[in-house]
Length: 112
Length: 114
Image (cartoon, rainbow over all chains, first blue to last red):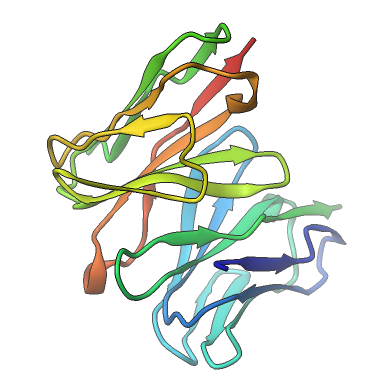
């Protein structure tokens, strides 16, 4: 079964704190994507991770990929209110017709 | 640069009515897909297409129909709307295979079936 498990599903944190969102996926893939969605909006691409050990950083967000463990993490450093959103990870299936399979999302609320 | 354009943005249907959600992209992407988003469920794949004339089912295809006559357009048809199809629908496009870097999403269609 093609499955993505994100945890936590809900995250409330204070400004200035650090936290990590975890994304486990069910089958072999070397392509992992992170998206951000603001309420009532579309999905915005944050990171594309294309190989084992890939690490990408943008501002206070850093994403990494471990294909052997089928695990990706999204680390938040010194959170600010503007980071409040829902974050989705998705992996690309391999072999045959490729499909992008999404997790249920992590709703992040950063409180002052 | 329009990217992925979905119409309409909002729609209310009565049970049993049919309609077509439009999706167009101007990036010459071969791969297009339709997702539905329901609270707490993430995005679930309805149908996808790897190129003109080729479509396939995703995770939740029942009650929906698609066709791909051109590279640019990928309409989603609801054959006989049901309240369970109340959802937000997103269309996405990308380059397939080794060229996949990211999927670009449209702005979504919020559909309510009463």
